[in-house]
Image (tube, rainbow, N blue to C red; front, side, top):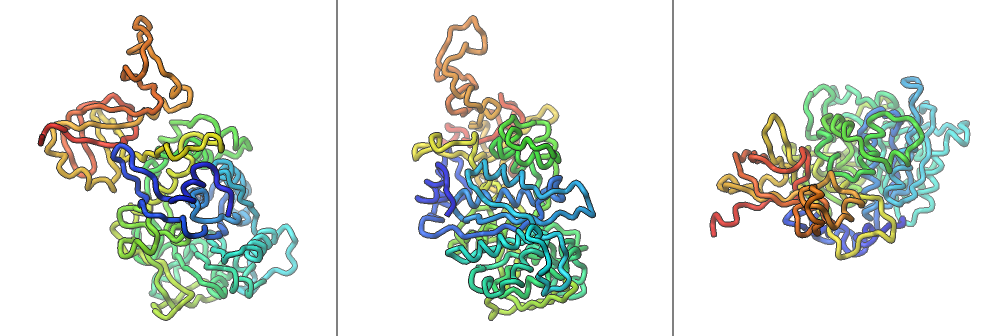
Length: 516
């Protein structure tokens, strides 16, 4: 198991998901013990992670697997990055910088290797004449499998080439030591005509994709789409969903925000550590937050770690989620041609081939978004901490339930959809007490201020912050009473509030005296 720092080690040893409710804001992790009695799942993450990015979803995926590793669900053994398609963009490079940034944030030391640049000549190819450097990634995979004391899960995102050739070289090793391959590629329609419309990654390397269906270990097939031309965000046998990036980005720690901003802004300089520790560019955060992000792989990461995401976005152990989980893997019989066209049927007797299945189409997209948000909020929130600074049992973690929104001279409290049921009855109240966070003042220097001149007027004598309403405090909690104009679904319109646009809301409390 990788070394865990500070609060991550405490959570893994006691109860990985036991994040306490603070000020009435309950986290999406369940309070049951998720990890105290089980070892983290060994995992290899094979990805088409490039800089400049080919598609930003690969960086969201990378951060997710690092978050699962830091929080003790998986043991991230290695990152294998595809050899970049220089014929498409000569500036592409394997993004080892992003891996370095995540290693620094999490305190882990996950190795990284680059895959083979040579396409497979057939589904059985092993490229015996390739150089040592060209097959460095393949050798890393074989070494990890051979030395791991547990079977290893492998995520395959992008090119299937290196995992396919590793399996062709050592099928017995894969049979003994590969716990399963999560194959994120392909078209999941059971209709052969529709399946013949190849998904992008399959069209690039059909031999490699086909070869993975031959590997002698479990294959968890995750088709990117059910139908390539459907035009639907979510379908039953496809992993695709979308979210708007400001549903998650503003709630992450500053260093983690900078990981995403350096990638989204296509930065190619080498100052990755300085950028990580620097201030967040609020303009970039707002601009990129307004963009939609297409995603595919999230459900597989949770499943591989032994977790499920419920229709409300709650993260539970798979055995506890039952019918509340939004997805499943169904046993199938499947065949794949050399050209990458699949044919499959349901087969209850199958033990080693299964297909990703969206069980709740209406809630899948919001559930995956909320589940990912909860997972990433667990990554070293606030500053990058050392062992000496790690929180202890007397510290608590808060999760915003929504944000202040100011638009066209109107003010709203917009809650995450998952918390909408908690608003029932609020429309009967004249005012609401809003508990929010002074996030613009959240720096170590401003938290250390204990005396102020009230109202910023030097003519007023110095006064302790606990005797004032100053926005500088050890814990930057703000409380104010706001008149309600209207309530609709997950949105409350209020008259005004002394808060910035985007300030995180921690809790709401209705009119205390209305029914007393």
